[in-house]
Amino acid sequence: MLDDRQIAALNQDYLKRTGPTDVLSFPMRTASFPQVQPEVLGDVVISVETALRQAHRRSVSFDDELSRLLVHGILHLLGYDHETSARDARAMRARERAVFRSIHGDAEDMFHNAVKSDCTVSDTAGDVIERA
Image (tube, rainbow, N blue to C red; front, side):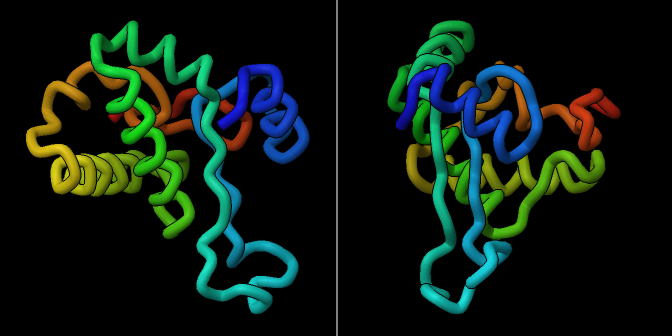
């Protein structure tokens, strides 16, 4: 859990993207030495400040927004990617909903107001290709 300044620095250092984001994932299996701890998927980093803003904007609880971001980040660790194609974005979003629903029950309200990375396909420069 970081603040916007801290996650913006990671976003710039690792993805060459300017500014804060809600969640970043760092998969261990793509690291230089994935065999060191093969049971570790990697790290998920969440901006508390961005999560608070998003929860307010989407009219959901802070806990639900943190849960959604954690699920989103873990799916990235498992190989899901919403930035490669609209099809992949839809597959990731469907899996995100299913996991969230298994944890919290009905998740439709949670995802109905999704406004960021879980519903947008971007190229590596961050330009929007398609909204899923």
